[in-house]
Amino acid sequence: MKLKNQVMLITYGDSLGSDIAAVHRNLNQYFQAAIGNVHLLPYFPSTGDRGFAPSVYGQVDPQLGDWPAVTALAADYPLMSDFMINHLSRQSPQFQDFQQKGAASAYRNLFLRWDRFWPVDRPTEADVALIYKRKDRAPEQTITFQDGSTAAIWNTFGPEQLDLDVRQPVTKDFIRTTLTELIQRGSGMIRLDAFAYAIKRLDSNDFFVEPEIWTLLAEVAAIAREQGAELLPEIHEHYSIQRKLTDHGYWTYDFALPMVVLHALYSGTTTRLAAWLAASPMRQFTTLDTHDGIGVVDVRDILTPAEIDFTVAELYKVGANVKRKYSSAAYHNLDIYQLNTTYYSALGDDDRRYFLSRLLQMFAPGIPQVYYVGLLAGKNDLALLEATKEGRNINRHYYTDAEITTEVQRPVVEALLALFAFRNQSAAFDLAGTITVTTPTPQSIVITRENQAGTVQAQLTADLQRLTYSVTENGQAVTF
Image (tube, rainbow, N blue to C red; front, side, top):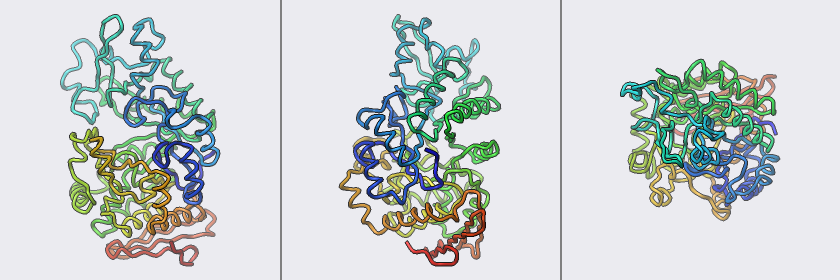
């Protein structure tokens, strides 16, 4: 089922109900007008990182459901699924076979050998320092074969996530087989998780290595096109990389928007926000919140260093129950460039500020993505955070059916659902249309969206200091 130009929900298979079937049921009961597409976070058997260390792509985690539940959801809501192109679980059948058989394994070339990547007497300290990494060690792990011998495997992320050698025929076959099955099971879009790390080259920083990264992306895109699906490469870094993807015709993420909007609402000024919106492409997905933290690295050179520092400081001051330690090693934070909080709590659990942030997102260029906790204006889950000592779990509450029934009756959630339904049905948000952004005063912003035919126009006028706003469609007031 092809993607719609409507709000996309991001959810785990057990977070908006107990399993995928419950998520589907709750979507149909409460959110049918507000949600048009679903990004179902990894629903495969996995041995770590909340699904992002998949062991078998051909199965659905039995705790989440089965393939009929996935295909039924995809029949009602165009589905995006994750493919971790950089790595596979060390508990996968492929790695287990390699560990048992060594050089005799059919998968001996599937995983990237750290000990064979480097020339003799390398890597040096300078080599390791050059690698783009977000943890304070060399990205390698020593494994022991059944015969007692050892080898070092490239290991960019957690201990369960061993890197693939995407140059090898066996890996190319694995990619083709896996993507084909996911698409045939109902995924109209594939999100390439950790895509920028997939290419490693000697004497490079091993992140978004050009031109090889473009060759890999073209190969994967061709597989998706053959099956009638599209790709969304996932990259957290300087926005110039996203612009390169846009220039090559790919969908991208706007991971800078969360911090830009926070800066605007904290400072009560609109200059940076207006400039960013005016420069943003339509072929993108906007976010305010995801299953990870709020990215800081993505906003460099959009906000000045002083503005970034101000926004981070204000988040810890204004944010409800947000503490610096939740984004530290004490809470297993692997990425020092992310801040762990729900977006609602980042805005002080303040309904009006939060609704304004979503208004700005809905009028931004592209297709909006809304994380399930954000859909219900969820507060920081300190109980889950402390029980697990996992920083990102502050934003990963498990909603029961009873909780959802209660939450949808909150005025702020009712207003959000009405706003999302308006975004879904109004022709003004045509991706082939236009956007105009002006700032009548340093505190105010006017965003006008118009369809390609010029027949429907929606306009948001907001004052971020007074926290006031109005919305019109073809001159008529719209209320939420």
